[in-house]
Image (cartoon, rainbow, N blue to C red; front, side, top):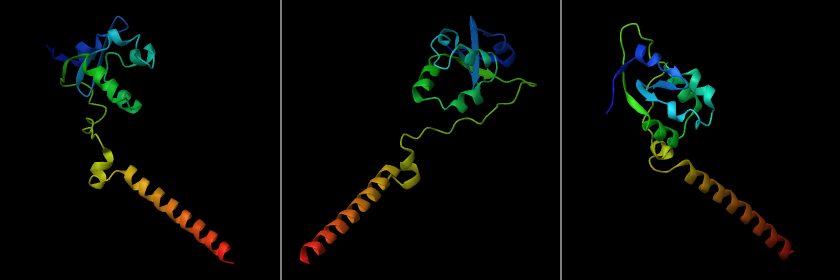
Length: 137
């Protein structure tokens, strides 16, 4: 069950015993995660009770961190007149293979493999040619 909270209600939850965060207009209860957070307790306490979206996105959290965050969801943030504006835009949808979206299915890895193979083939051909020229003389 999710609970819709206002920004002023969230701001009352800013201690290590009761810690709420706002990320992308969703409220999360991070109280149980304080001791487990890889960045330490202080990082979470600095953004407790406020919009932590910018801090969360600036770090570049992993997919695993985002899954953990899903388990802490309290509910949506109900923005009221006078509340601070969101600090960053909502995240772009995650693409499982970023190279596929940019190159029509051929990722950067395939491109690099072709370049490396081409260079290796050229070097091998030059070596073979040099060996043949030395042996013929």
